[in-house]
Image 1 (cartoon, rainbow, N blue to C red):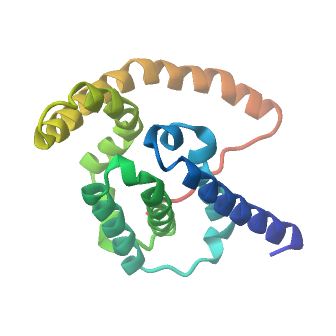
Image 2: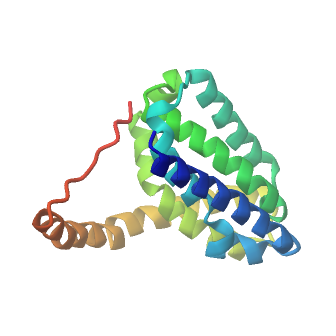
Length: 195
């Protein structure tokens, strides 16, 4: 690793710690830290850090299962009002899980996540993330089980519709406008094997 790469990693680590600490004063109201870019950019920073260190990591399937369990436990127990603490733990667990998947060290969990239903859900996951808040807010006066069930179902439906309409148009436009420019300046896409 070169000195420049080391400084980059140190800078990313410092930015992660600084932005994580920056979230703390906003803990009194979840909306102030959950929706703001400056208080929610830490996941992007960890992703950049992972890109640099991925070839050097020594991973095994136990790490993938632990990360998966941590994310599941957080999803089952943490309320949105506690998210200022849980976001950091979830981001770190997600980075470990992605690292295991990207390096082929996720074992049977990787095989499960590569099944057709999981791949389909993964393609819809960002749309579900975007749609779940308005759905949950509209249902907030209902019992928790109803909110959870209907939010998941309605978000899945809305994400499927937006995937095949709005996102399909965006994917076509991306290929039409980005690739010729990338070819013109000599950029080639880089594939990260996920197996």
